[in-house]
Length: 48
Image 1 (cartoon, rainbow, N blue to C red):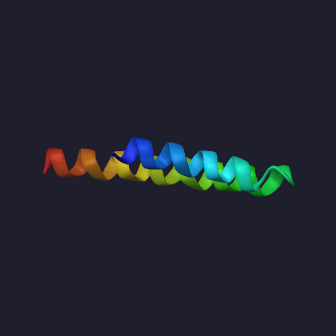
Image 2: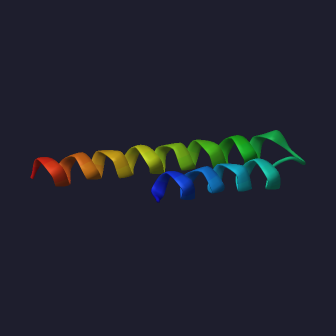
């Protein structure tokens, strides 16, 4: 579920940022950090 959502977010960021590269790059960077945060939270939930 979360993978599909993050993939659509990245696609959306690329589409909306096609006019200028920087907003798209920032959007992808933020989405990547969010995905990493989700993975870390899942690891903590499973270990705890």
